[in-house]
Length: 99
Image 1 (tube, one colour):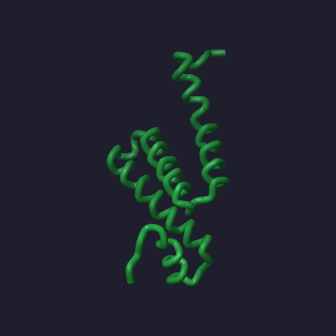
Image 2 (cartoon, rainbow, N blue to C red):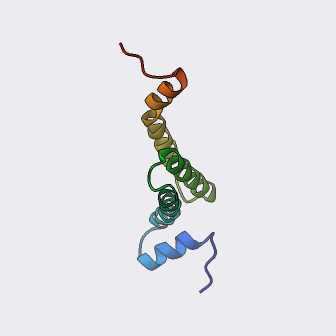
Image 3 (cartoon, helix red, strand yellow):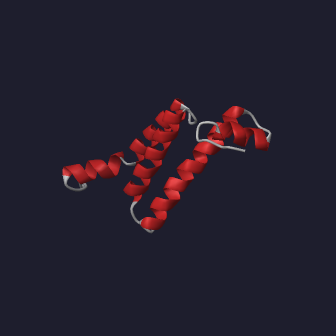
């Protein structure tokens, strides 16, 4: 059987006996976890920004392929931005205020 990148989620869903939406999510998660695991191994888990960039980039790729829903990318991006808002504010302002 010939598998191309475009029909990989449908073949995955067919083999697992699930819907196409579940196949698309699983194919997206495979690519996302591949990118995250490579960045975590390369930086030995010490660079959170590199892992964040790899994860968001993989989500953008799978969204462009039509596998990952846009709303999930927006929610993950907002949560990530809220997580890094304090450290980025401290980095840009030159340090924490002691109030």
